View 1: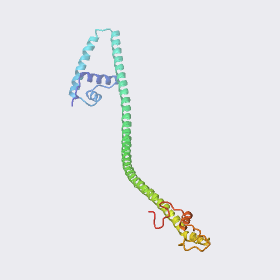
View 2: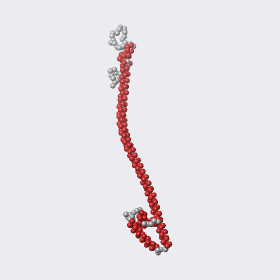
View 3: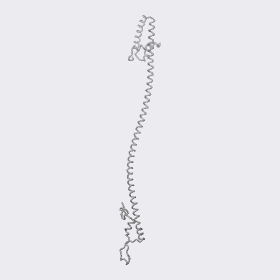
View 4: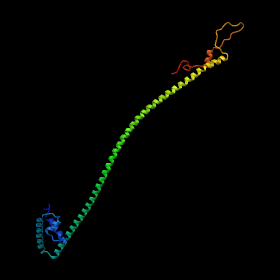
Length: 239
């Protein structure tokens, strides 16, 4: 099967390359040099045309001097060698560049795999952190609710403590009043023992004696145990 774009110039280059190597440029050799592409019929036709052109050139060369012929041959060989060297250099540079590109591509693939693994790890970590954040948020909400309830309980306990202190002060006051009331009989007994008696209805005075007025017991009792409004009133209890 003929190679697409195969022309006489390609066949000529393959033939010249074989000649430079000292190889007979047969149809099969030229086809191998072309990469096993191209129709043998086409290659044979181009070789035949090139051979005829060479024969014409050789006929023309007979008209030239030997020195000019040698110069032309050397220049043609030199040009061919330079072209081959440039082609080999370009091919070598392309191979090196290809090798570097392959290495870079392989490194990029490895880096891509590493980034994919890192991305998966970060995604998993983000999911865990999100779950932890939600749990922490719920715990914080519950803690705030408990703190609010505790604050209400503290306020209630403070109010209850204040009421208990007031009640305790009231009980202590009642206890002091009750103690004072319990001491009244002893005071009265003491007053009797010192000669202070309750007032009696005045009778007829003995002849020659002047009756002395007796001090009022109620007044002395009041002086001994004074009372104030709302304090120590028998029969009354503070709330």
